[in-house]
Image (cartoon, rainbow, N blue to C red; front, side, top):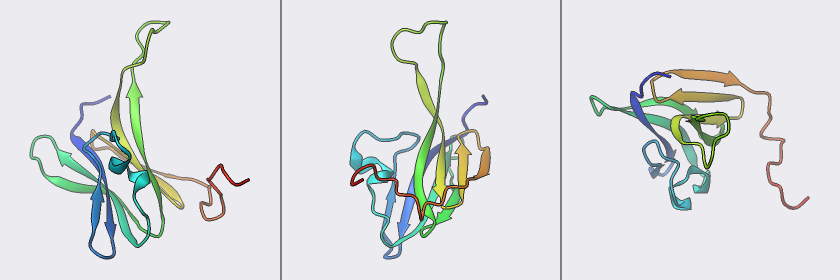
Length: 132
C-alpha cells in the first residue's frame, strides 16, 4: 500500500446552491456529519474531493449526477497482528466510493481510482428492511 497523497471527503451540491460536505478522511461521529442523513431531493451532483497533503490544493476526483446518485461508501483497511488477535483490529480510511445507478467509482487516498460496473438496478430494488 503506498503512502497517502490526499485527504478525501464527500460533497453534495443542490439546485438551489446549497452544499453539504463531510469531514476529511473520516466517516463522522454524529449523524449530521454523515452523507446518508443528507437529503437527496433537488440534488445536482455528488462528488468526491481530495485535498493534496503538500500543496493543499482541493480538486474533484470523482463525480456523479444527482439523478443517478445512490450513496457513498468509505473504504478502510485493517492490519491483523498475529494469528489470534485480541481486541479490535486497528484500521484507517484508505478511500471513498460513489455508488451510482450503474457503477461504483472508487477513489483511494494515494490518488488511484477505479470504475466498476454493477448489475444492481437501484430503481427496482427495495433496500428498506421494514414494511415487508
